[in-house]
Image (tube, rainbow, N blue to C red; front, side, top):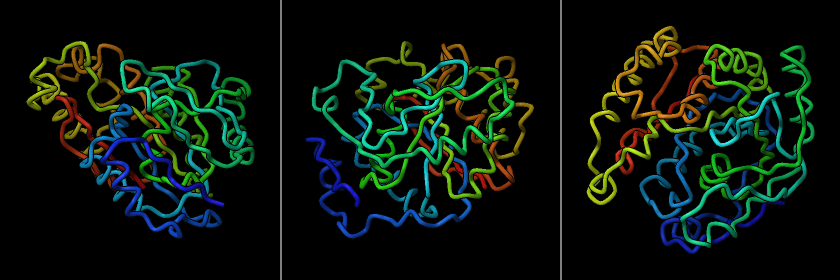
Length: 288
């Protein structure tokens, strides 16, 4: 049975939830092939942003119904590869600070996901050792966007740790997991197209101005993605303009390579969300 969406105390999300049909929670019995996504996920204040809620909700409605969801989030770096808890309604990880306390009381009680952990383990067998299972819950790189995209929490969700920031290794990880898409698993790399938080100014937050380094990096990435130029993207450390400021640390870029590695056809890449939030590019895409 699906769980009714929980109020966040934020007007934008609660208005969205109030407009949902309580009978519209999706069946998860299908096994239609799913795309792979790169999603710029946003912090908990996403729930107060009506534009972003509209974009993510519309994106989810266009997708086939997933049987399961597997997320590689920027906020879990651990080797060897580790999976989050498969238990139903596992407690969330509130890996943030400085926001309203209401965000640290939120829940996202997804169903048991043992079958998906078994499938991930089989797909990654021989890839540097066995996949470790843990009791860690979903972090905000997973549950924040999923709470908007699948607000009834009716789909089993697992999170995969980032074992390396080498783009070639993460591409290979995506390739190994790609077969899960044909069994109805939605693969999501959850990061942010630019993430230079230390270099944002007051004007970026109050007036929505965009730093030159954020715009330059986004244009470079958009061009390379449109051309399907994996070589250019893999060599971002040498090629990308503004990298020092756009990604002072690269954990929010790394999940992009999971989606690209899992692609069956890079020419199918479709940008689903573009634009900026507080001067950061929220560019997101899907590939078949």
